[in-house]
Length: 71
Length: 275
Image (cartoon, rainbow over all chains, first blue to last red; front, side):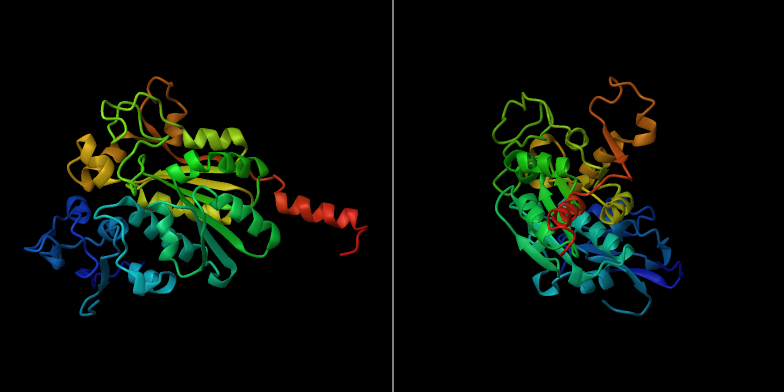
């Protein structure tokens, strides 16, 4: 895993089932439910790259990727 | 990271998977993919088997040679496969009911034989797929459809059973401890002999809903709260450990002869040295 500062969390909306695990465990509090009860990243700049969301997502729906790269 | 791994090790046309929102089996599958990456597993030299149940559906998504066997008999199939082919890695994924209730006998005898199989049990403490009946690992006084007044019986201690039956690598993790889970899976795959990793996962729909867990995250938080690392647990009394989950590597034996080696040696001996 690279410790690059150019990473940001990106949600794959087709896979997200809205269980809320990533939202609950995000230490930077930058994730929330959107109007369809799926995960949304509110402020990618504040992400501390801890990988807690990616590690605990049961649906492989959230991932830290290089900025500008769309999943 | 996980995107690359899912592309590499999963059948992407099968995703998203059929597990309920917030199911811990997905977390365990993710940890298994990271472990595969860590040990640089050879996809063509690995066979993954499973029985029946929620956890056993994992083989449907793994892009390996996979066998979806009958209920509880995954270890029996795996033993046969391993005796025939000693050049392949054999990994078995089972649920708690699959491994302990229906396949309990196969499980203890696989431990006893010390055959080189990695058994991963995803223990969600309930029969999730059939509607939430109590399983042998449902904790005492917990509710399920078959125990509406609370479970009267005590739960099985999976790892102690495996140690007693003679497994040479026994470890335990919970879905909350995802990085520990990855490490334990990787060590179990590398281990020579029977390795067993019990993983506590959450079943928010059939277990959590009946036992006052409002969401999957609260179940993960509960697992974190009741977990005790193995080293800490050694200095605790049995009263203090009541209701706790001891996590980490519980036993790891190095020099033990694996069944396959014994079988090959005997074959050589009785054939008089010739192949």
